[in-house]
Length: 382
Image (tube, rainbow, N blue to C red):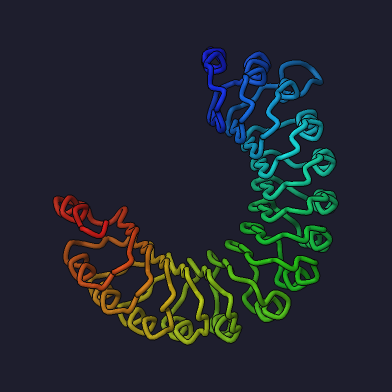
């Protein structure tokens, strides 16, 4: 990589973040030159999708980074590099005492690799991303042994986690854990998620289960165990009227985010949602459903006075639905997502009549295009 010597030769002693995403065939020589860079204030390093090459037999592709002197490093992104076992060992041996974010998505996480990971001396670690890997029960058991007292966010999206592995996950001793992403793990069952409430995570606030087979009937268990829960993310899985009724009956005063995207919601389900008692709800995602104008009218009867974000992307809305939206009361709404709805200029004319006093972001991408777009881009609120 000819660019690396040029990069490190610069006198950038105040460099705090360097992102080298998508480099091709990053070799040992380039990594060594990078590690020798005089960046004493460096806090963030990204080598995402850089195809880091193992430079010799039985050697670690990341071993040159052991030479680096970046005492303030807080965030490392090695996403999508297919790191071998020896490189995971290097991660554990590296002296990065201030490390807070470690992103390893897209690297196969075998149990042997995770043993090195949990041995790392990262007492300040707050976010760990192991998404898009293949993790069996032994892997999850090893992961649960990690002692990261400040861990707040754990991402295990699309890890093919088997049902029997969930019993180990609840053993994780992470007293500060706030957010867990288990989306796209199709083998996890509703019973597994009921067992999750045994975990000792007193600050737990956000659970992402999009694209799983978990039924909403698990919600009462969570309401009892985590009354402070403020983010529930389902979606990409049809839900029944009975399940929606369960959602409505869980009166979470702290609930701020509710995602039911691509849930095949029908008119009765929307009517039930309007009855939900969530006085602090700030974000509602109903994208990729198919509500009619009358459904939108019913939805507006709910208590959405604190709602700040509404996602209705790809919901086949028409001009009549825009009339209903414009007639609604959205005193704090700041973000409105209407992408992929084939809205024409007539529909947007209706939308413009709404009282959008706080609106900051309006997403109209992939709607009807034409000469009118330039006019809408001059809309004063944008």
